[in-house]
Amino acid sequence: MNALSQEAVTDICESFDSDRTRLLDILIAVQEQHGCVAGEAMDLVAAQLGVSRVEVEGVVSFYTFLYSEPRGKIVIRLCNDVIDRLKGADRVAAGLEEELGIRFGETTADGLFSLEYASCIGMSDQAPAAMVNDLVMPKLGPSTARRGIQVLKENGNADDLRKLLIRDYGDGNNAHDLVRSAVHNNLRQPGPVIFGKMTPGSALQRALAMSPVEVIREIKTARLRGRGGAGFPTGMKWEFTRAAGGDERYLICNADEGEPGTFKDRVILTERPDLLFEGMTVAGYAIGARRGIVYLRAEYAYLRQFLEHVLEERRRLGLLGENVCGRNCFDFDIRIQMGAGAYICGEETALITSMEGLRGEPKTRPPFPAQQGYLGKPTSVNNVETLCCAARILEMGSGWFSSMGTPAATGTKLLSVSGDIRRPGVYEVPFGIRLREVLEICGADEPFAVQVGGPSGRMVGERDFDRTICFDDLSTGGAIAVFGPDRNVPEIAGEYLKFFIHESCGYCTPCRVGNVLLKERLDRILAGNAEEADLEYLEELAQTVKTTSRCGLGQTSPHPVLSTLENFRGEYEKLLSEPTDGQLATFDIQAALGEAKSLTGRESVHFGAERES
Image 1 (cartoon, rainbow, N blue to C red):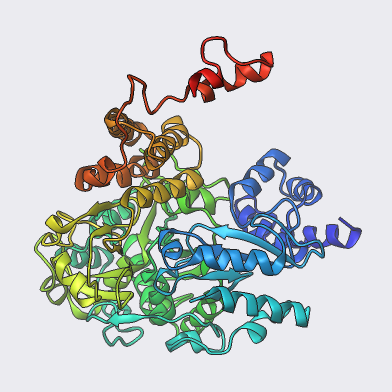
Image 2 (cartoon, one colour):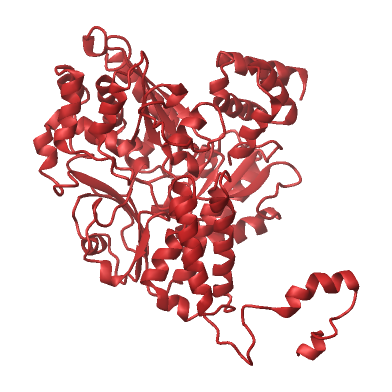
């Protein structure tokens, strides 16, 4: 690092008041200027913040989008989740490798291109998709990917990738001057709650005419439950946070949807940011917070400038800032905190840890965030969709909202539907809708298996298609992936396990090791080297990982295995082998003796290769 760069690092730290809790922002800014966070930069940041180098390096090494070694000027991150692979991501990957002459994980000799995989970039409705730096390229094919590389090579300038690569902008605000993205909303069925007509400020005006306690009561009367999947009553969460006491509280919006197959928040952030920010302001008023923070996933960085513009406009209109809507003693403002690529940060305590400038590892509960959250203060963490619903409840009334859905799950639910269907996209449906109806409206011609709730949810078959989407039956944060009869169910379960292995924070052994062992046994089954006993082993180990892991990731990561064993056991049994001549198909004597043969330099006397054959 040269002297100028050292000065720049110091300036970056000072721009965040050398605040240790803003470490993630500082590291992101350092990387934007220097291409990576090299060892020298870590030392300088550590000295400036008064922390150890180990703490800084621990954060850099935790997040996928932070690098300690230089990458190419153009980093291409190809999404390789289940849906993208079913739609041809592997062929796109082969085209990219051939065109660039490198493999994934490598950088070209001229330092211009790097190839990497991404677990999910929120584009399953327009897969295969990739990110070229922060630019999203949806609906890629091998030939379009190759042409893009050729264009970049010919121009040799990565300063305006958008101008070089994008021919047509997407619909709605994707074409806004501050977005200019090729992404499409694919909003197939707008509903009355999230996508109904809304006047900015109307919900806030009604809320401010009430006391905070009355606002919370209105939310409780509407029976609003969190839309993240767990379904905790929002009014109770706000009530606990307000009652926690202290002179400072925080409202956090979890915009880190990272569940493969989920992309509904992307559409809300693009088309309904005013509704979201209004809901955050209402929540801030209700719990007594002066500050709200949106934790925005790194994959949606292309929306940040647009969202900042909407926030600024709301400040201009008096809907944010000091004396909101002219009401004395209610100051509230919102800032955006960028994530850096870590699925686990969708868990609320891990998200808080990340915002505090630490590795995004979950915290032990209790205390719960409502009691002791961000910076040790009472904090309410709410989902994007939940906050939008809250705004609409204040605008339209709890009776209007609770007239939709079921008694235990009121209102509507946004579903991100993808896979083997004719109309992938976002659907706003009333709670209580049957899964079969969802499959019909999205054009699922031959649904064989349906993953409800993303990888942490459950995979169901035909016998469950008449069950309902709601918290008490088929609960989902929003992701629904449909698979046709030609798909390999155990293989899909293995792909989901691979995702969890990659995204585990590594803190607890059941999750860190257990998922690897599950994947190994699943691979053995897929290779045709397993017996009935392996299914029993798989089931027992999955239950162990589920019950002994520390946080929600490990507690749900075995679900793909457990639900497919329950509902598609026949698909596993087709892959099993029968023991022959009393020998176990699962045991390879030559492989077991491999290390001993290597050390002694000779074949086994009793199990020589020739004797075996």
